[in-house]
Amino acid sequence: MSDDLESSPEPSEAVSSPVRTHADVQGLSSAQVLAALRGAGEATRLRILALLADTEHNVKDLTQILIQSQPRISRHLKLMAEAGIITRFREGSWVFFRIADSGPEGVLARAIVDSLDPSDLTLARDRARAEAVQNARAEAAQDYFKAHAAEWDSIRALHVAESQVEEAMDEGLGEGPFELFVDLGTGTGRILELFAPRAKKALGFDLNHDMLAYARMKLERAGLSQAQVRHGDLYNIPLPDGAADAVVVHQVLHFLDDPAAAIAEAARLLAPGGKLLVVDFAPHELEFLREQSAHRRLGFGRGQLGRMLEGAGLELHRFLDLSPRPADGMSQEGKLTVSLWLGQKPAATGTTKKRNHKVEVAA
Image 1: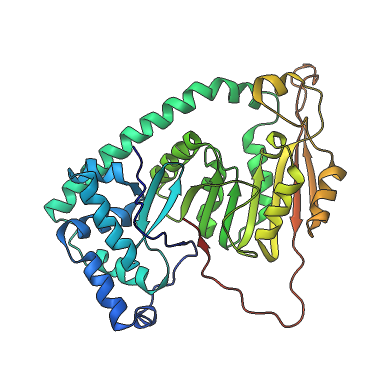
Image 2: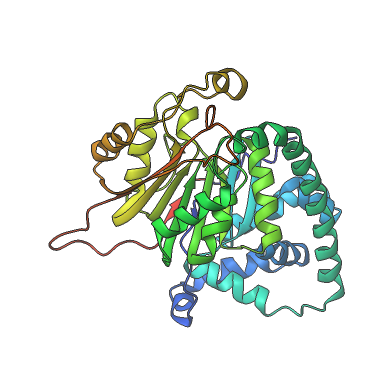
């Protein structure tokens, strides 16, 4: 069943973290204020707005939570989207919704939700049913993860502990804070978990719907509301040039036919002075990874990836190899070295326009 609202417009979703001030609300015309209030001014729509303030949902979720028909829910969502108080984004045949999180409409929408009594019985029942729906979704995501866990565990056993890799990544990117952090090929969402706490907004993109479901579940359970995942092609990310302070491409390039194009797209996203951190395997000869795990490339050399970074207009600031150590005389044959490349976009010189902090993702 599709969640698509064919007759509704597709407003873009703002992904910058809003600074909610009274001045922002004053930026609305009287017609906009009335439209926003009408958008929330109905019992079911107000309940929907409260639910979407906590997390994102699709139409199917909302029909189960509110126990109402799909056409009715779809009609409410259409009106709310037109009023600008919620935003939508497509993920395959599904469409997800969330409260607008930037701009004056988003400020007003959040103010409406914040004014609600959290002990209201109707809203409390909605939250309880929403939790049940999320738990069911989480179980499905866990089933997918468990089905592939053995494969991932076998690869992890070939290289240094993930904790060592994450420590090196943490040191490379620094403490931030980041206005916008982007993770390309987000997979399980682990990198978002690591870096979202130091970002005002964090976005992860992936083409695998099952992975996105799993990552969304993990982020919701971690309470990382500033972190979101989106269905997206690594070669064509729906963000404007210079939108991000930091971009990570973690264990993704070896799956790609054209890693240089992915690096160029990541570099495009960076603001002047922004950092791109690439983590992947050093060159190896484990041919079975091609057949068993769909690896297209058997690792990358320092210079090979360094040239890709330079070709994308970045400067290679740091390179690090993390090689497994022999344990109790065990041979290192058949083991993998994890390499980290840290590229940086040159800082802007001379007179430049002020960076636009309202970054939008196409629905």
